[in-house]
Image (cartoon, rainbow, N blue to C red):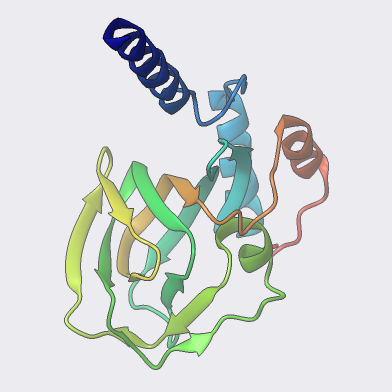
Length: 199
């Protein structure tokens, strides 16, 4: 009897372990983005004065992840409400070229809700706020090859951009705050007319 109990317990444990080890995204495909496509986003940004563009937004099972291309030109001082904060989406920057000064911190001065109708809110980084400054912020000198992780709820602003900065933006979206975007949608976006001064 004891042997039978041990066998049943062992089988139960094996089933539990196998269930616990299931992938969070079952039979999901990998998403490839070519350097040529990323360069097309950069050219669109430069030619049309667009800062931020979402290249992909992918379902990972328990979360979504977005990939953006950001191009910012020379900046001597930030605008009056340049602090950004995103409620639900964390961001990872990987700097491709250029250099800049970025300030981060959770204590945002003069917070104002970002309009829900903005393209960046709807398609890129979800709901959040702008602000006038960051109290007791941490200053980071970013250059090519650097990365920075900005958690949801943390304020961030560029206070100086030496000439320009171009970086990949990985957006971690566990609440699925923005819609998915696939390769076909990306191609359609790149083929569409761009609006001068941003989209």
